[in-house]
Length: 459
Image (cartoon, rainbow, N blue to C red; front, side, top):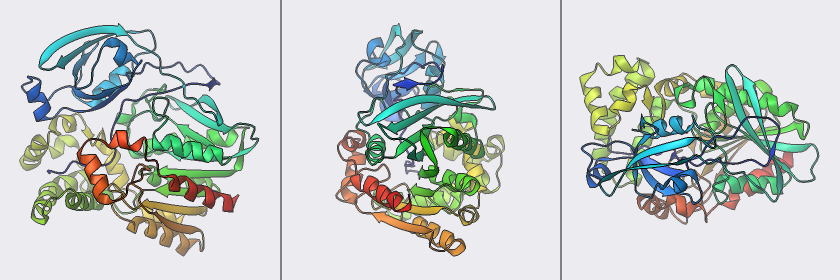
């Protein structure tokens, strides 16, 4: 497959603490934005093959900055552990707390360097609008960090439970006050809504027997089930006015939680209702057109990849069984994903994460939701692909629970709550590698306005 699958970017940006209710200690934070090393990057740095992780940017004052890591470095070892993927470095830095010693091996301009330093604690997330309360939820080998933004001076506040998408990364946003998700949170808080988030296993400060990269989708749903039960008990919020907001794959989690707890309302943004097998085919076709591949090239990519997707998602064979197929083995080798798949990983998650999503019948799950529903799609969302899914959600819910669901298309919005003037501008920004810089100054306020207006009508 020639097309890079655009689900979400992965970043090693971490976060915060203002008010704290427990003794879940702060982890160290690198303060890096990273990508995988491709053939061209490896060649420029004198590497025989792709290895390590490539540094896109370094945040000032963080561990990486103080250790001496620079933009465009390739990190290959951290405290003696070999780093060949973003998962490797996320897992390794997750072992350390503030004050621990770090030794880094990296390549810079083709030269191998070693550097040492002390791990720095994650900074604190701050807000002029809210009291930021850090606590935790404990269950079945997990102690997971929770973050509650509580509007200042507000008693028994209605609350939005923000359910994030698929990446295994921290939801703390202290390093990213200009990030659109944080601006959306601030909009909700300014309107009088508390906002609640929970980390996935092993992410942020969380302590877990099993890391996010090793769990399947239903295990991830348990994270949010336990988060919801914790939220219901918080004295600062109104348990009769809980609203779910499921972003991307969080929009698949949302109906599973809502069917059990029946919150006041459910909002989804940029999600889907078909099977994951169908989605992978549609994703390849739609994104191929956006990125100027010919129809012939796209068709070839789909036909080449479909046997792999079938074995993984429909036949649901293990990775060892799938790799016995020589054609699939060769395909993954050419893609550069062979080694990660041997280790059980596909698109930055354990392969069983995707098979467990494939097993869900999402039309049935949505039919069980008796809450009010707002299904949102951004006009320039190249991850959710098209608005068909929100109209399907609207149709399914209203068929079983009349007049409960509304679909809404937000003009000029993309998957990450960013505003673009056109799809051409969106693609150009992505192709130029400027998305992260662009998003900081182009939050789409229509996302906040649409959700706030809808919730206000229901309170």
